[in-house]
Length: 181
Image (cartoon, rainbow, N blue to C red; front, side, top):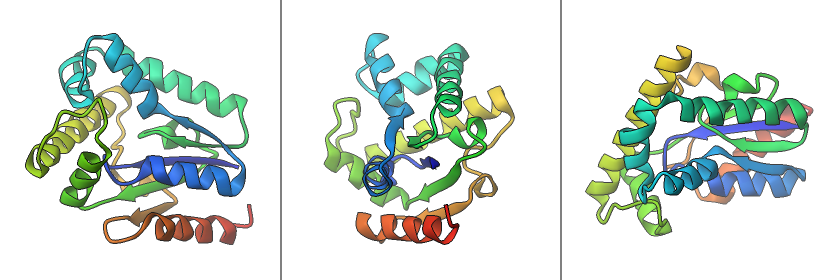
């Protein structure tokens, strides 16, 4: 089973991917992890600044990440991939999108205290998320002529704003199990 998981920053992708991997015995791959590693390599501590200031002007970084996704999807059959445009590069996957209220997402990011996130308040985190989402959306529209937030690209959309992680995972599992995969 191949699953691609996309969504807005702070929607719970990392949490959900781990739960789905455990439930269905899948390996995990996340492009966000790769981007964070590259971010530090290029001297950035904050992932939003890296995406907005560097990646937006260096599409080769996105192309490198995206080719890695495509290759991974071709070479593996049992995984959950946390990737904003994984739906584009792994067309035979179950494609899931996680939506979330901007303030709820911002609070989750603040609570996670990631080393690559500089925001110190809800307002800062909301703005950082918006900046990051806008930069990524523009980058992918420019590179691939695709809107990474168009819900038509996905098999299932779940709003995680008022759900616990267990509830989100259960909704996704109900959908997957109902497909007979």
